[in-house]
Length: 156
Ligand SMILES: Nc1ncnc2c1ncn2[C@@H]1O[C@H](COP(=O)(O)OP(=O)(O)O)[C@@H](O)[C@H]1O
Ligand SMILES: [Mg+2]
Image 1 (cartoon, rainbow, N blue to C red):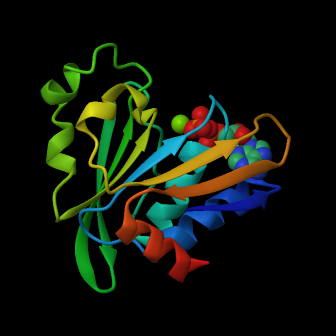
Image 2: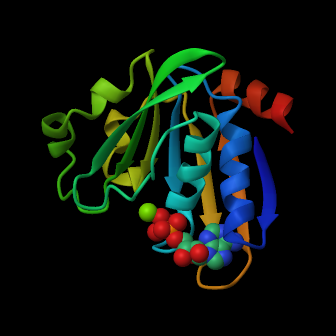
Image 3: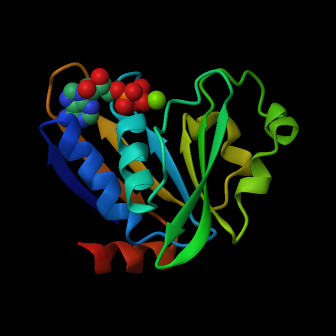
């Protein structure tokens, strides 16, 4: 199942992230796909707004993982934001502890998830952002897992 929406501005992309954030719950993994400058981090910041994350959510370009304490529906929730662009080998995923983020007490957003494909849970949501520069973006929400397909239908 696939759902597409156009985003003309960075604010709209952030808003889409915020809207999605309202539906996320512990254990969710969201793979953010798109070129450099597509808007993956902007989208993640919108999710952070929905989680009432305090302080700026910056790109984990060099640290690979940033973790925030968020709140969703009145409960504490870890929000883990990864950017794996600089990860060279999938085995490093274990070293940096990606699987610690795939727990029920965390929601995990992953930019450049391709390299850890083998570690990703099947029940993930894919958000692909097409376009870059000042072009409008095409934001595609995609799910293969049946529970996610149902959830996407409820969201749209
Ligand atoms: N419609 C749009 N959606 C998202 N970002 C946009 C859009 N239009 C322009 N931009 C710009 O593109 C850049 C996206 O940066 P960023 O979110 O860091 O991308 P990524 O994390 O995918 O590399 C920002 O400078 C933002 O202002
Ligand atoms: Mg980024």
